[in-house]
Image 1 (cartoon, rainbow, N blue to C red):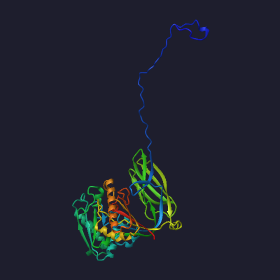
Image 2: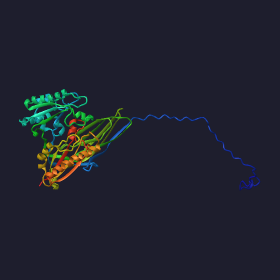
Image 3: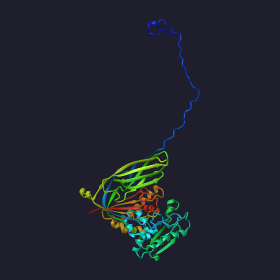
Image 4: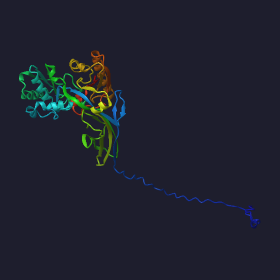
Length: 438
């Protein structure tokens, strides 16, 4: 028995023979059904430009928070693409070329006001008409081709394409006896015949002139220009959304003036902005950008940012006694598809246009590029081989200059690769010659 259960004397005689402890457990055997219904997620979209970068000659990306704008004496040359491209199963050129009827009565000098390679090559027929008049003994062969797919063995279409271009040239005053037309199937050096871009490029006419000067590079700019460094910015978007993206838009402005508006459909992609000479204002005014995305359900997100600009004017150079220099930029050499070979025509251009511009002590930068056809890693190597080939050639002619060569592959889109002409222009090297003023 239990005793002495308390220190109180009142309980001295109290004894407990037994203590029982009990635990009651209550359990409901009926199942408890949980609600497995997930409440619907509210549609959303969030988008922004996560980074603005440039690519260094070593191939690395570096963040860009500001850029330098500088006044320099500047000359720029652009290549003339010796092709005109056509839509599938059509004998009329791509609509990016000015209408034939307008060209026949147009002002041939209008091309002189153009400042970029794509615009100049959209006027290639006007330029060709002027050059054929400038070199009256030159003859021209126009070769029509087809894509070898939906147009397989359709030499009639190839001939019609050549005749369309011949009719324009005769209409603008070129004697028909100076022009010969031919019809082929695929071009002699076709672009990738199994790639949609390559197939589109094979629908064309090609020009072969007896006088090389007919297709010599076009001098676009001479004088004082404002150049940006870096001159190519890549905007990297970051988007999260509950639904697919319908459209996106990047708008670039400076002091309220719209510089560019770049739009796209579907999944957002990196956007390259190649800053043209004198495109930016001659002020210490930042570049503002707005990025807008819209989902297929109509949800919209908009974000903004800015890039600082440091403008170095000619007056500031004198005040700070910083070195003046002249810059000549040549985008002259167009390589054949998947090739790094400098053709005899390209050697002539190097010898006549570029070698004389290189002085002792000049800094010569040679940057190689490719179009988007093919695998990115291969294109990067191809662009480097192109730049190296040109550097080796120039070094053999002007060994007393300083040289730098680099390749960017398809990572910097200098020209619109949605267009056949843009892809042709992308198969190039850009040669920049900086010469300090003595």
